[in-house]
Every structure is written in C-alpha cells, then in structure tokens.
Length: 312
Image 1: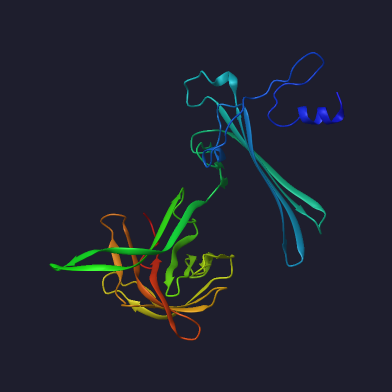
Image 2 (image 1 turned 120 degrees about the vertical axis):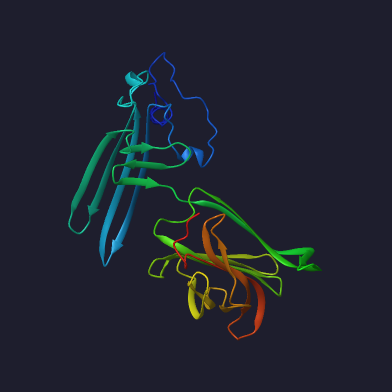
C-alpha cells in the first residue's frame, strides 16, 4: 500500500486492518444528531471525550488536557448483578507548566453505577467521583418588532389593542449555570424599527458570570455582543412589600451599540409564581433611553434570583 492509503485505513471508524487480499471492516454510515450524539454510545465498545487547550496567567503559560473514556466489558453484558462491571469509566488529566518545564498528571477509573461513575446518553455528561464533564448549552432565538393586535378585558372592560411584541424561544438541558443565582435581561423594540437585547448571568456576589446580547438595525443587520461587552449598573431600587426582595428598577446598560438607561414604567411588577414554577421574579414593561437621555424604545426588563436563587 502507498503511504497515503495506509493513513486512510488507520483513520477512526475502521475496526479492522487492511492487508493484501482482505478488505477493511468499517462501521456503517451514521447520521449524527445533536445533542444526542454528544452523549454516550454504550452499544459500542470504546468511547472518549478529549479536551486540550492552552491558557496563561500573569505571564505564566500552561497547557491542559482532560480525557474521559468509556469502555464496554463484553464478558459481563449478560450479568444481572448491579455489581457487574458492564461499563468502565476512566479519566486522565494533565497540566503542562511551560515555565516550570514539568507535566503534572493524574488518572482515575471506576465501574459505572452506584453514583460513582456515569457516562450519560442524550448529551455530554460524564462523571468519575469528583471529576466531571458537562456540556451546558441552549438553543435560543428571538423575533423582535412583531406587530401585535388583540383584545384585553380588564375588570369587565374590553380594550382593542395593538402594538409591538417580542418572541423568545429557548430549549436547554440546564436552566442556568450552577454558579449563577439568576439573571438580568432586557428585550427592547426601538421606535425606529431596530431591536436590542442584553443580558447577564449573575453570581451570588452580584457580579456577572456571563453576559451578551445583540443589536438588530432597522434594516435587519445583526451585531452580536461578545462576553465582557455588556454591563448592567443599577441606579435606583424598589423593595417588594411581599417578598422583601430589592430590585433595581432603573439601570444603565452599557453595550457596543450605545449606553442606555432602562426605567421601569411602574416599580411593582414582581411576579409570585410559587404555585406553578416555584419562582418569585420581576418582569415588567420598561422604557429605553439613549445616551442623550432621549426615549428611543420600550420593552421588557426581567430580573430573577433576587428573592432567592432561581429554581424551577
């Protein structure tokens, strides 16, 4: 065989060897589907999740590598005992200290089960005692500047109403990061036809764990915000007489698009949903002002995790 042919035959997916007169044995073609295929495939004998990277801190440079492996033990598959080692999970972790010119490493192994080791199906979630790998992500889209028409009946009086609406749709494995207690979010339809969204995931100490957002121009051009480009600075607060939570009802929100001021139309827009989702949060109509103090839009401000850590 030529060298190129040898390289092709050693690629992942081939379980046999190419020798003279004998064909290679390959796995059948498979159409990958996510997030399902981020998870484990216990019907196959071996599997791994492999992460490598580099990082720096104060002029010190490091490389890092973490690998979780899963292997099926064929001889135990027919056993009914919970103690049968049907799937083994093991892991390697290593850090390269560039300046110190040293590799630091460790390794672990355990059979799956008994809340010790896990390689879950459906999405990437692998655990080996206190080592873990989780893929936290969500699917999310917004549809701003929607024309809205309808009728509102309030205390027996009907109001035929029209205006602008904003649709958010998200589906996810996790509500939010384990270190977050809640979030602050705005979705604003601007009067000129543009749209602004900005958010931050908030830690217990009030600092941002993550932030982001986007600005869509009236022509439909979309500008995404990177992490660290959005800042929420509270200006005025309101205390709920029901939950005693203190909510910032006026914010300065810094984005790459502009510095905006967000003001609640009324202060008391706290929702007590403990009989359904179990959460208490603030979500209400708010006005948007640009850096010159001109009112330029209206939308919604949402604040969670102020009464207690958000749980649903």
